[in-house]
Image (cartoon, rainbow, N blue to C red; front, side, top):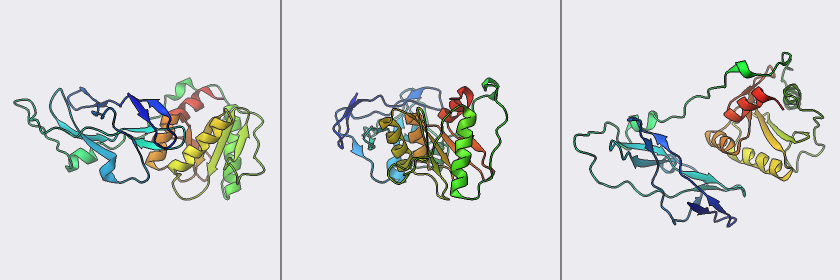
Length: 248
């Protein structure tokens, strides 16, 4: 279905995601075709979830609200048709109800599962540097990118205008050395910088990422790494696993 961004007027082709019901059938939120998408300016628990009925077994569950990221940086909420009051199939008694503790706590995102290490290319062991300062964090990220196979890595002289900490041919990278979770905005800004430079983007963080930043990075294919104070980056999403496996 076509979805138009109200911020930049760009039209996207969008297909809602499918989720697995307990009965094994796929569940697709019933999006309202033709209804305008709304930019997300702030988030709360109520707006993050929608109630959807499984057409196969009649069970009501809550699933993530469909969203679409636009290249202009806006994140759009896709309207969903409210669940009908139609009774479930005869003989069925759903055991999960909207708003119940089971409906909310059982839908947490699964922990990140890295790819098997057996396919990793032959490389020497990575030798990290201890992180004591923000500059050490950038140095550790540069060493890791070089270990992955990137060459001619440099630090831009003026970081204030772009926020980019490291560049290499075909690559831009950002390092967040703060004690706060890296935000959605930071991930999207890095992606826009990579887009303007026709380069891949990689993010390193000491404190990790907010859930919406991780989801957005997955959508955009941005590898995310976290670093401990030993200076050893660890992949935290699928694109990062793939980068470690294939190298630069």
